Amino acid sequence: MEYFSGPRHALQWLYRHYGLRGVYRGYTIFVMRDVPASGIYVAVYELLYDYLSTTRYQSNPADLSASMRVSDRRMESSELSHCD
Image (cartoon, rainbow, N blue to C red; front, side, top):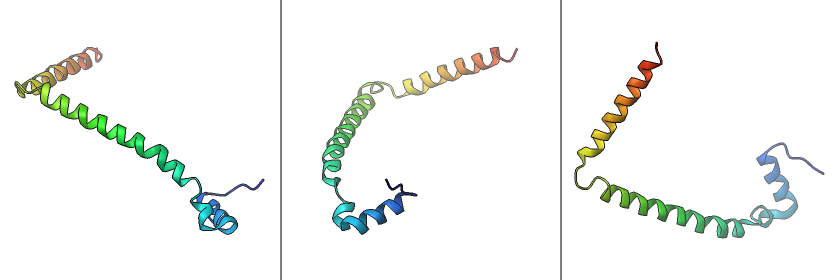
C-alpha cells in the first residue's frame, strides 16, 4: 500500500495513474450531497435572521441596547465579586 506525503503528492499520483478523469472522480456525488445542504443552511439562516430582526425589536430598537447594558452590568458585578 502506497502512502502519500501530502495532497500534492496524492493529486500527482492520481493524475499519473488515472488522468484528469481520476482526479475528479466522485466530484458529482460530492456536489449532489453538499449543494442541497448548503442551500438549506442559507435559507434557514436568512429566514431566521429576517424573522428575528423584524419581530423582536420592531417596536423599540432601544430595547436591544437596554438589554445589553443590563447584561454588561451583571458581568461587571460578577467579575468584581471574584476579585475578593
